[in-house]
Length: 537
Image (cartoon, rainbow, N blue to C red):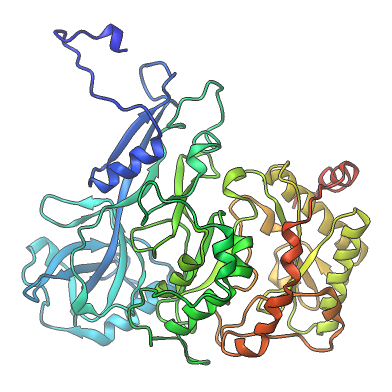
């Protein structure tokens, strides 16, 4: 194109940059740009829409104080939109616009209950336009919410704002307009940001090489991931100073566990947990109001994540352009998740270096409440026996709930669709053999007296709770690896964060240490036997 455009012609060429698209994009966000437009270096310029182009958009996210709400237009009880604000240095509440998306039915009720209790006749904002006042109910400015938005408008209001969750750990009078750089958000227009001599599908383009490496959103560009040796040393090294606002805030009312204690627990189990979550996309369950209140999942990065947490670009499973998912690989970053009241950690079954090919397979045994523990153990042993017959070594852990996970590592050579079909066929075979006990369909109505064999943990984008992760349930139970011999017990074992001191000795003989050493593949005949006979449900 440069060779065809002259300096004195009617067409002008915009300056372009060639290089690592991911780094250029993050740099653009740091400069408060709206985003970047990129194309394949070897792609032709053609009229109309083209799969050669990608629009990558930066997004903002911060806390806002709620100063009011507007009713739903259909007349039902809930939230049509929240009126947002922040305090200036003089202590005045500045109006920042509205957010009217991101509410589930439960969130509608929860927010409305809270706002009804705070309603007042006086407008809390310093100033607001007549349009902004229309239909508004005013409240005492005490509630703080997390909001994601595309940019600030010319009149200093948020654009395309979406509710992300409550922030009860943040006092309303501390909320200020943040001036940090926006985080990365990719908007699908096309496929790739880097030259690739071979055409590829839009779900794979951006990502097999440079785009899949961890990019720390808090570190310098030349920072390198902490070594495995340093992670292992966390077991005996005192926890460094972790930034925690309100370290005494209770995250679980039943046990009384605080943010500080949660961080200390995560630091203590880091050497055992990190090998199974490091350098994988993660979904985090955050509970800003504690384990007994509303929680939400977060899988995308933002600038509020603790030091050491990075991002990995993951293409949308429906064929869209990639988005930045959370990933980490050191103990300090893991412990820092306590600041965000993270109460569950869920890794993908694949590694950042081979996102489309899983290397961990999980059969999740989810029993009906009425079944005795011995029956659940029997089922786990049956899964193990099936895998043993295929020369596949498997490992076991309690979920932190009522079930068990049977997990086994494999060489990452098949994509998620094949592994999902194979595990589906496996559990269908178990259901066919014992229909009175097993169920392979996600139907709660049919689960009475049965064990649901959940194979859907093995589809692309699905996750399973990490070993040694706490669960976002009252009491903060923990998903702990077990030896197979421990299934001989008569009662379901239960481990919690609060009683960690009584079971910490288990870390020294972690049954999952061998997971990283096992090298195995699904035998070809077994793959064909189960993956080829999956019934469509």
